[in-house]
Amino acid sequence: MSSPERICDAATYFSILERSAADLDWDRVDQIAELLYRSYQEDKTTYLFGNGGSASLASHFACDLAKGTWVPGSTLKRFRATALTDNLPILTAWANDSGYEDIFAEQFRGIIQPGDIAFAISCSGNSPNVLKALQVAREAGALTIGLGGFEGGFMKALCDVSLIVPSDNMQIIEDLHLSVAHCLFTLVRHQITLHGAEKVVAARAS
Image (tube, rainbow, N blue to C red; front, side):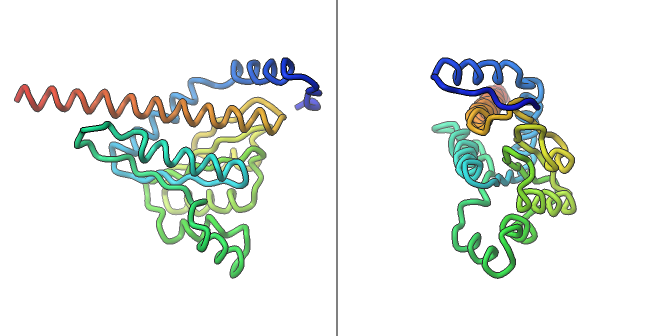
């Protein structure tokens, strides 16, 4: 990519954000939403992970998927999602005893199952701990999904499906990562609500 545009006023920032959003691969977003919904149908678990701002988004997205997709008053099963970033003792234990590059991979070795989703979030796509976790997940037979930026980095080759935000500005990438996460959550919730209503109608008709 070319050098990032110089941003010296709000109009420029939001103009870049708008252009980057327009250039997103929306079909890929829909595809990832379908994969997340399929994991729900098959009682699989989605694990989210990343560093820094991406760690915050992993926690936020896991909360949206696990709690926000619940239909109030219904008896529908819950979406199984968790963020590998949320257990500070285990993160620091693996970082101290093994190395920071192992903080997600070693968690996976104890919990990841075939058909689960390993959902990596990395703006650069080159974080060693993210790459190592994806390798472990692939070896375990999990589906790997990546949310990245810039050119996708090494993460792109380790993902079954990836969405790369077309920007070389870290803040723009993180802004759109949050928007994509909210979009995915909204689409999954719609599917759960729609099919849940269909089951209720079918049960009443039987």
